[in-house]
Length: 561
Image (cartoon, helix red, strand yellow):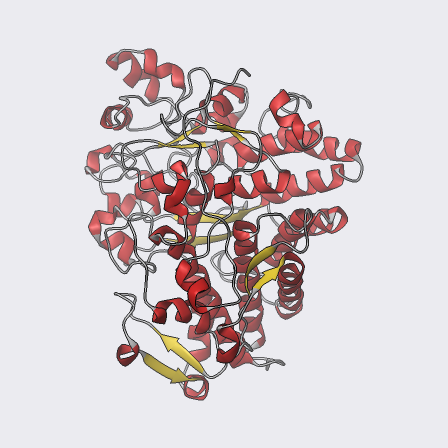
């Protein structure tokens, strides 16, 4: 699917972030100059309630809308959580099952991720649109925000830091710790002029992470007294969490530990009952969620296309009775990697978030009986397995539950919240950062955390596989395994593979990875360095690009664990 957009879109997506105007778009088709509505900063700032509306736009547009295409027929066009899956299927921990899977381009990698294809436009549209919203707020707030604007400025600084952090990790070929001079993406702030946009080079890691930390420093001050109404808006704890992520990537271990610890205040770890709750599991904010977005009943992604173009359609598998949903009814299940699943001990409560592969060896009656251990709709889940080309249920996730336990009405079932930051991540950052300074201290923290998931956990179980020892210590491998299991499906897989300089293994005995995508790559795969859409490099003459990824020409020989 090729979709090279016009010069208008190419320049606009980065170039709209100016101090002179705020540009509003009808997302349907990205119209020409004559169709655009331009509102000057002065006009916008004088409109009643306008500032609060601009602040709200920095978070309210995270999910629920057809932002990229304007079309209801693109089931990967539902916002920020879609990027979780785009990144995660590039690795080994998620199998994008089924024929013509909507995430197949990212899973099968190759030239479809190149700069002349529509896929490369998706992050450019979304992320620079979100950054534009932040820049609008910061333009209106000014360099010294008044009392009524300081909170909004803090929220905008927080969100802009989060967006640029994602972009830096998606586009840089090397991490900050590995190469401070590696290129990320062009920086556009509220002070960037139109004249600068045509010659705006990709920022180095050093410049990008300096901006990110500067934004977070500003947010830390501006949100110091802010008390939010819900987890859909960032507060000081989210600023601390983002600083922990930043310093982890930068390998500033002392600061990563410091801010991860600070971020934990006021939150508690999920229990077994909460993690695996059939009504509220990973669909409703709770005491571990620090930040989230939510799909609302009146969102286009829920109202249109039978809600099939939504997070729930892809990740919620318990609505077979509705006849809708790519996971439940169209055979496009997101499965856990079989080897990863089999390394999870039976005593670890997180294993219950995935259906055991052994059920595929059972007859229908026996299988339905066994599925009752995972879902209140065992017959529906059996049918979900039958809808897949493989006719199997093994590896299907039940981590992300339908809203309020709804199994028949997908528009209710898919109206869910999605966590963007959980306190569990902070515990794992703290443990890793501590251990990179004093390994025994890190082991102690990691063991304490892991034993909340598996009371039988003993340190050293997961860090010794020969494949993982090539680039990091057994301690970091152990932390990585915990991250892979705890945060499965939440968007961290590619970031961790790049940060830890890992490869992937998809080809091994009894793998469920799809044929022609069963690759074993011993270093970071080239497809994890995203390409910038060609129209940007055409009209921004200072902007370089990453090479078009080349996927392996054939499946790899089976790896022996």
